[in-house]
Image 1 (tube, rainbow, N blue to C red):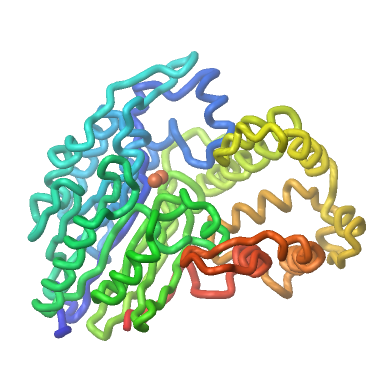
Image 2: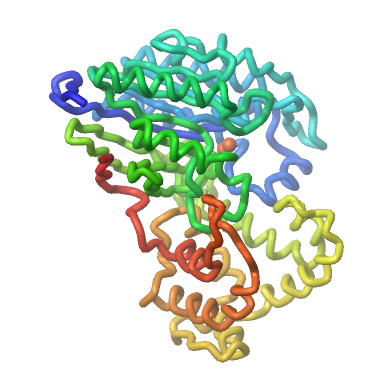
Length: 458
Ligand SMILES: [Fe+2]
Ligand SMILES: [Fe+2]
């Protein structure tokens, strides 16, 4: 690959990236009894998303460290036509401020039955068809593209001298994977980039690598058949992909069987904790510098809390509500994980719910004969769990060896390891995996910094 240059800053290309904007036009309705019930199990904002997107777009309009903005999908809350139309007005403002904007659509952008809450129960609002995306967002990718796969709503655009972006969508017929035709298109575009001496990187809503080791066990958290895709991409010369969807912060490395690298940089939603804007610098020494910028504050009645604390509390309340409802509504809790019909589990869930409610970390440690540092003995188990789960989504997870929270978790894993060993699990590559290691490396980050780092692409 030859040197590439961009603007005044030779041999570099810079851009901002946000994802999962989930814009909702507030006048459709986001309040009332049904709304409150819906929000009990939500970590993402709903009524607030109009205000949050307003502040993020205003911030980007003024931001002067790049004049390109990428948006990695889930543009609307849940596919409401009115939300799309109003979000596009914001994108037009951003464009008018001098930014080039490139988007890709995803699972929440097309929904047969989008909904709102105007005081009572859920009401239906007008949807869009999948192919409306092409016309609606034509000015934000398709119109500038040097190659378009209209059927798969994907395109390649020349971002700067020597750098191309491949924006991919995977929901043709809701299949959530790249079919053979799309894989062939990816191969063709990768070859053309190589022939033209271009650096090609990708943006795809769904993570291609599980964001955290634990996510490798939950198929909905990353793209189907992704092991095949990451091997193909890495070997075809695509070494970097930006993703979203899980509303988590993570950066993961993959090495193909032929020894080629691929990094999946997954960014959190702007409308949920930790609410991050990425800033990326690609350089012709094959590095990508990733920086993370907290989203700006937004106009909302947060009961005196900072906006950041408001989002943290929303995240924690989801976990605490799930733990609370285990006692009384195990069907709904299991339903959140797609197994609401497993009635045999109801009594177990109820017992665990009661335990979580009362137990402290110290009491559980005593019962299991494991060491627990004095500083956290009085912490309620449910608060410990909320913090642990929040960390999995925040990235740079702090429950590592050598910390009070991490040590008690690792001691716990060691204690239950005979049971964990009996549970056969497979990694995303289909190979048998060690459940204890998966849990340890999900609670604590021992790998790449998920926020600020320099990735060597080759
Ligand atoms: Fe999302
Ligand atoms: Fe998504």
